[in-house]
Length: 309
Ligand code: C5P
Image 1: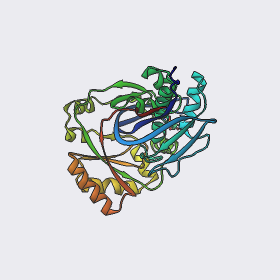
Image 2 (image 1 turned 30 degrees about the vertical axis):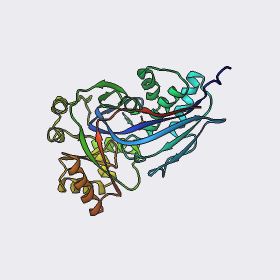
Image 3 (image 1 turned 180 degrees about the horizontal axis):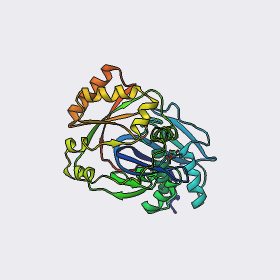
Image 4 (image 1 turned 60 degrees about the vertical axis):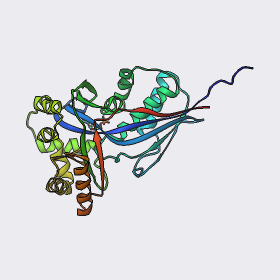
């Protein structure tokens, strides 16, 4: 008797969010992107991406933060599935997204979904691509996608898609103040350009003191190095973020920044317990629409479930 062939069942990948410990924005390039020097850290807020063979390409979105995610052809996970299928003769799939990362929140939630979809389909289709290949395809979908495939702590250059490893010790505890509504990334970059006016902007270079702080593993050291060139622009578009940042510091954060292009604010605290205290204080103060805790660095997109029937 011959055994029935194994049919690959749904694959689920868990993919983290990111904060930028440093985000230095250079001049606007001829392709409309800004050259960046950034240091990413993957933090433990997750989207789960499940892919399964289907008659047609499609996407559905659920979970606590599903509102506002497109379910048409604009969906970045669907675009990722089609792109990989074009490259590797993949057949149609349905992508289900469970959102735990804020939408348009400056934590790369969309890029995470693209990264998760690529890793999940690599597994479903048995492509066995090397990570660099997945990152390269990911970079066509969004500047942060390669980092969400890689995870950990890394430096990003170019428009953020070119990664180099960073030696980071320890685990860092974050409290994330979510805002009502999102901030469109292109608008925040445009506001940054507007605020800078006609000044010549130099090519950005990552700060050696930040790298030194990450090698100590001491959150007090890291807190002094948190920098975001998009913060002024995000606060200019959403002045309420100024109050959120002030509240976080007043309630005991070691440091606080707007995460990426915002509007999420990320506060660094010393311990899990300090994180709980700050989360309670921020929630009670009403400055944030919602508050989450997460630690980092964590792994990039990884398979958590694969059913074989
Ligand atoms: O690459 P991603 O799709 O995440 O970028 C979204 C938008 O953010 C870009 O279209 C661009 O307006 C802006 N951006 C930028 N410079 C970067 C990254 C993003 O101007 N390095």
